[in-house]
Length: 249
Image (tube, rainbow, N blue to C red; front, side):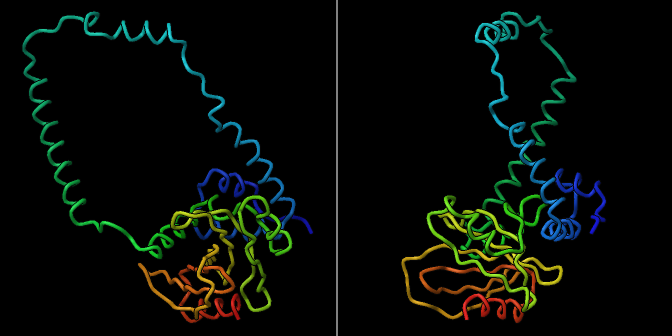
């Protein structure tokens, strides 16, 4: 079947110019269209080297030396002793600096010293919804997503597809949670995105799913078979719990 996606959407997706809902539509399309997914991966491979620090060229030491001497105080032109307008600018700038400092101090006093692991996961979830951040591997096939993690993690995350129950797998990515590596599996429920974070734990005792709401996002946490699981989404708590029971029946 011919692809009906507007090519301009792929360009905007790659440039991270799409809103969350539109980006989700594109990523859902990429999960089912090999042609577009291949094109996106090709462009990512081209862009990666262009953003590499290898292309950075440092100026020779002699040139840097010459420029520094040109702008040193001994080469600067003499200035009159009095600049009333300059003094006014200094006073105005000083007031702005004082105001900014006061705001920073107030922010430092009122902000919490630390945030909980689940709050950090919610921040991670929101950040992942930015265009181009959600998935490293795009596929609805668990037999494609699971081996993609091989060699990239020190553990093999359990990967399953729940499309028959209304929670299709659409991809995954590498992530970093609470000071350690984690696998992030991405599922959809209608237009809702579910990030399922998985990492190994020394505590082998299983636990039942528990729910917490943070800034409008729901986090369901549980432990099973030596793994910690965290499902994060703006999906309602009941459906997110149902998803958790599918993952850990």
